[in-house]
Length: 60
Image 1: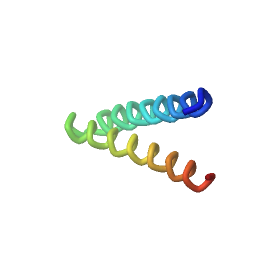
Image 2: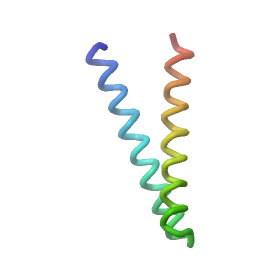
Image 3: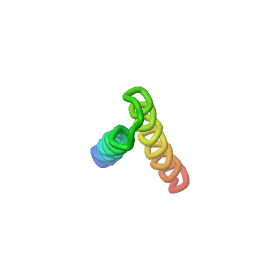
């Protein structure tokens, strides 16, 4: 992998982590329990990484 590919992957993972954290905090403050908030955050992170990989696959 080239350094540019590694940096773009790190950027995607960092963005996914931020989305997951924001989603979990929002779900928790909306009244969801902790396990449900964690699952919502993990689902949001998986979705954002999936969209990133789909975009990379479509680009190639």
